[in-house]
Image 1: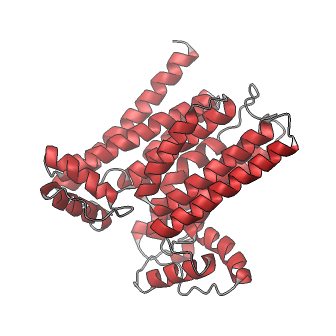
Image 2: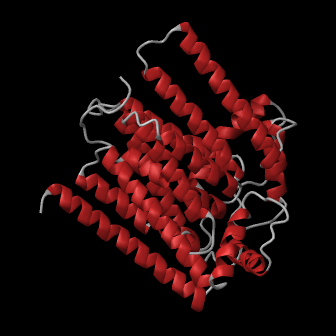
Image 3: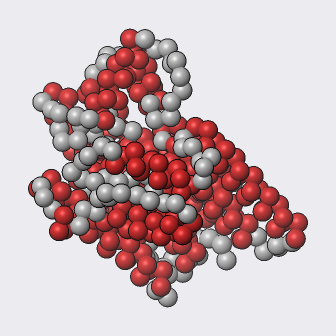
Length: 376
């Protein structure tokens, strides 16, 4: 068996194991559950889908709840089965894993590095739980992964036809959660900037066109985001403070904040990095109260190591394409920062981390020098 065949076989086995484990959790949840984490939002999405299956009229379009509407349409054709809902989530995860494999091949990861990327992606405890039940995370993960793959195809292979797939994935990610709409617009701007930078001829007209395009995208993004996701009419700081204060009104054991004050620009500049740090690494070990938090602490340690590995790799002279590493890491940080300003609870944070784990993994393990692939 040659190296290529062995690579395909190993990836297939790992993904199959990940899918079977998730299917077992789905079965436990549907017939003997609920399993941990499947008794609140997951059950609410399923129950709303059951309602839609009995009356498929969509009275108002709600970002996020559109997942229940589509699931309800499927229920109306088949059966309002919690097992079916969980199975579809497992299948969406499997599709996301397939695209992750495509990314590892595109980045020319070694067999060893691809193995570690897929093992962590497939067997991360929080991922197994959240992608086995009727939550949006599997689908959000799928569309984010497809979006990143599309970006890399545009940048590495100059396959501009992938702009269509990028816009497609951003649209569907955005209707699943408003925050992903903002992230998608950021990706468009970032890819456009990278593509423009790669052009050897940078005339004044090209620079003006690039600036106008970026401004138009950002203006459109802010308008849509303000209308359909979060109200920004009083400024970003006010929106963040209002949103987080509302969340703090609900007392929860896993809250890592007690108060939020963002009254001016300085407060905002101080708030964002602190909020991001807490979002990434809470619960801290000294906050450990219940055994259920232990896996999250280990996942935080893994996240810290992966981020350290990325930063070390970027500094290494053996990395031929440092700009590509920066692209992946900036994409990762942007998504996590967007989540962090609206999150106060490490349980919720653990769900959001799932969407960016693939990006972080390929950035951390993209260490093998190879043929130069991106902008010169």
